[in-house]
Amino acid sequence: MGHDLISAPTTHVADHREPRFVHEDQEAAASAKLAALEERTGKKPNVLVVLMDDVGWGDFGCYGGGVMVGAPTPNIDRLAREGLLLTSAYSEPSCTPSRASIMTGRLPMRHGLLIPPMYGMPGGLEGEVVLPDLLSRAGYVTQAVGKWHMGENLASQPQHVGFDDFYGFLSVSDMYTEWRDPYFFPEVVYSDERTEWVRNERFNKCWVHATRGEDPENVEEVTIPVLSTLDDRWAAYSEDFIRRMAGNERPWFLYHCTRGAHFDNYPLERFQGSSPAKHPYKDTIVELDDIVGRLVAALEETGQADNTLVFISSDNGPEMETWPDAAYTPFRCAKGSTWEGGVRVPAVFSWPGMIEPAATDGIFDQLDLFATMLHLAGADDLVPDDRFVDAIDQTSFLLGGGGLSNRKFHYYWLTATFSAIRVAEYKYMIASITDDDTDVVNSGGFSGVLQQYGYGKMFNLYLDPKEQHSYLIRKLVYIELIQSAMARHRRTFQAWPNRPAMIDSPRG
Ligand code: CA
Image 1 (cartoon, protein in one colour):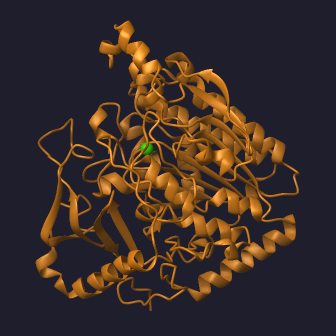
Image 2 (cartoon, protein in one colour; image 1 turned 90 degrees about the horizontal axis):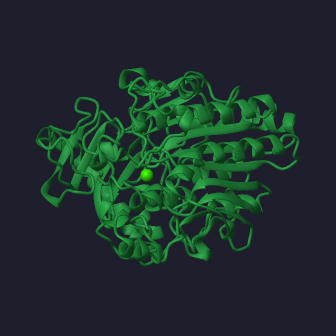
């Protein structure tokens, strides 16, 4: 008999942990593989996370994009063919909440980073228990490269939350360049007074290098020509890190976050016009695919590929309010929303010899990386027990060969509003951002109105992946299962105190 996602019960792990499926055969197969690998290599596995910015579910060829949307992605497609391609992987609706959830294994309502801090706004990871710090305690070398965007204040910077080294910028791409570009900000560029005013705003205009426990050192001011070179230089830095780690007796965690393809895109000169689409966004996708190829080549050339879990993903759905500097998604709405277009992201795992080639629709929440990586590090006991942890250990989903996720429910939060829950192919939505299908440029995302439904909407994501037909009245048989899961989820917020949320902002 197969495993039915609706009827199968979950296992209680601990009061402060999300309940999970336990698939005994998968668990045993994964454990045996890991034990055999460790015996061969003498250490725990390395992890390379490549997190892209605002790249859409459909951008890569392996998700039906690629050539079809004027930007071939042969390197990522190859990893997907040889690895595990997930079709139901989820982020949060925007950058900072997603990234902080990976770092903490906790939903934004718990860690408090509900919205991206912009232009020097206060708030960040400070005070949370974070993955790189725990991996350091488990013996890992920890390296962060590229975009940070989890707080610019010193205590929230990467080198103060467990990374040995950081080489990148502390915020987000547009903040460094939009006010410098006469096309987008003529009222600043052509006004000495406004330019001076922006320059005096309290955010760092430079990208930085930092080492553990130290103050960051400015590398260079991020002008538009400099910005166009960042992804290339950051990739070179990560390539060098991978090569230096070959032969090191300690395992390593490389958290490589690209600048692209967040608006505004100014691709490296040699990629300008390189895509069939000739558009800067598409040229950037081609550049990002090339970077994935470079990092994987460095792993292969140094003999580390078979001891390294590689994860390629994006931190949220496409930003459609900046179209055409925007990605492709086949789903409804976009970044900023809890419609599938906002939070369903491309996600490819690769690990030669350990992960069998497959595609799976099992639910994976990006924050599951937290518990999964700690398990790979042999450090399950470092998962904090003084707070609720949403992350589920998905090791056996990735390595066990059965293709069954250990996660039964996915919870959608729209900043401080509980928006929806998914189980199996059903999504029950009680609140959302409105979108407007008649407006092809500003199709929702951050621009809509928060609405709550009197009775809720139910979508069957197999029959209706675009969420256009509420199926609730015919599917009430599932409602008790769903509402009891929602009630249990809500009770975790009463039983475990959260951090106060960061102030809200019109930026969303
Ligand atoms: Ca993003």
